Amino acid sequence: MAKSKKVKRIGILTGGGDCPGLNAVIRGVTKPAQDYGMSVFGILDGFEGLVEGRAKELYNEDVSGILAMGGTILGSSNKGDPFRYPVARDKEIEIVDKSQAALRNYEAWNLDALIAIGGDGTMHISHRLGKMGMNIIGVPKTIDNDLDATDLTFGHDSAVYVVSEALDRLHTTASSHHRVIVVEVMGRYAGWIALNGGLAGGADIILIPEIPFSWQKIYDKILQRELAGKKFSLVCVAEGAKSFDGKMVVKSTDIKRSDPIQLGGIGAVVAKNIELNTGRETRVTVLGHLQRGGSPTPYDRILSTKFGAFAVELAANKKFGRMVSLKGSDVKNVKIEDAINKQKLVKPDTQALVVGKAIGISFGE
Image (spheres, rainbow, N blue to C red):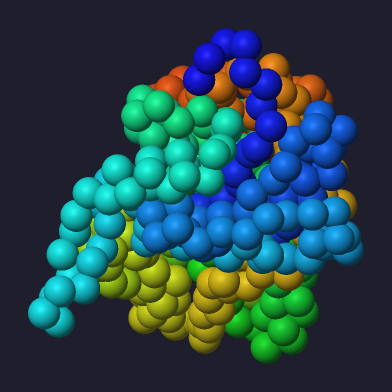
């Protein structure tokens, strides 16, 4: 794009899994865009819409009243990677490169920039599309909080709230029946939801992917609590957690996804082993997509709105190939390529982890 050309038309899409705060970003983009003299083109169902040419104009009335709504009015998909696009042929799924179709639609719609809202997968795709000539601006979204170049992603706070509220409720029933209750939460390969949700919800044991656990340490913690007069325990386990001698539990695989592995089932494994090896009645609750749905927390509403408005500012100033980023309390921006260098995982010196250990939470070490 010529340096002198003013940005007049921007596209926006929501890629990957849904989460609370997406609509707040769409609103945060659409409203200030008008002040810059820009029109906003909403692409439907993430990168699928970019490949298949499905989109619609967005106006102020379209985003009025959506701040507190969960999900996304544009639709989303984690199966639309243009570089490995699933196509049904003769009852089989064939993975093909549809990136040129995406580029053609970008050009046919006369877009001067594309704001892509999503997590690690979306940012990887965005970086590659940028190399093809699209003017990309990324907005980090994932309940997993595993993007390294931002202190926090919107959606995470809302997911942690769901986990902590669930643990609050399960605390009373566990206590009443003198049971061990295992709660399985999302997060894929990062333990942030389990760590922060478990800390906020008063979990006694937290199991995360970054710390392979010892089965005996889990049993010992439950029995130690009983000796101290506490006849129940709450275990918060991330879907990607694994024992020292085990592997992550894979629920299924789906070749249509950029990452075909779907984790799930570790909660049931943990509950079964606890009951068999301690003799304590144990139940399991899998929170699943409850963590993705519903209205965003006030924090996520504010953060999403800031991210959206700042993305428009980056577009107006032609700062492409950048991702909006939270640093401390300020919204900054970083190169997308820097944002995808590595995943942000829980480290041994992470303060929440250190504090959790200090107050007696077991991490199965």
